[in-house]
Image (tube, rainbow, N blue to C red; front, side, top):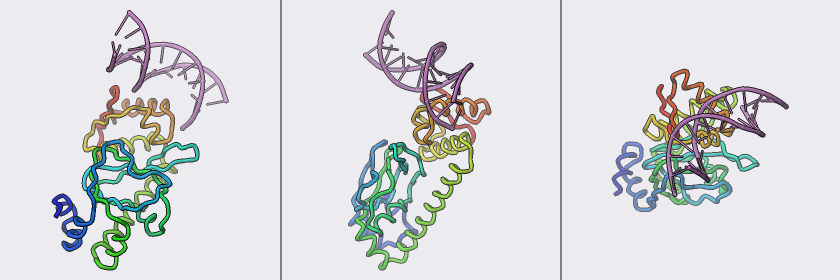
Length: 210
DNA sequence: ACATTAAGTGATT
DNA sequence: AATCACTTAATGT
């Protein structure tokens, strides 16, 4: 049986099920920046996160990105579940934020397990619920928060999933995540620095208030 | 030393 | 908050 799987999901999923997962699931290592799911893709597998973090993005008509949320260890993508059950195509894009390890489960199995294992049912329902909550949070930040609060939240999220309060990125990349322009990001970052919330350097941003 | 890329800034809409 | 136009600073060759 796979050690990491047992370690992260012991107590959540029953032993029998964990055994089945490690037999059937295929371990996949994803490099930082590598695309896992593209918009319009047919979803045949459901990823279960063992290690790392995945950025879930939505795209507008012009092909411009907007981050929805991060997926971390122990998470699975509710939108993937949605696609699987309805046999629909992906509405989102998933990109590995850092070096990530997932276990891929064929969708026919996840249906079978729904009836077979109570813990699986709970797990799916719970992750559905927590993804929904994060989606609402994302909506809130877009609709009700001004750009500087959005930016700060994103920096904190990024620091969290990377497990480091020093973020290696450019203003341009942040602008793309938040769907704004680089100039705006630069100005807001400057403001946040003056408020002693962050520390700026070329290619790195240190988040002071976590 | 030069070119390239990242970041800072004023002015305009 | 977006865009333009320009400057300044850091980094690579």
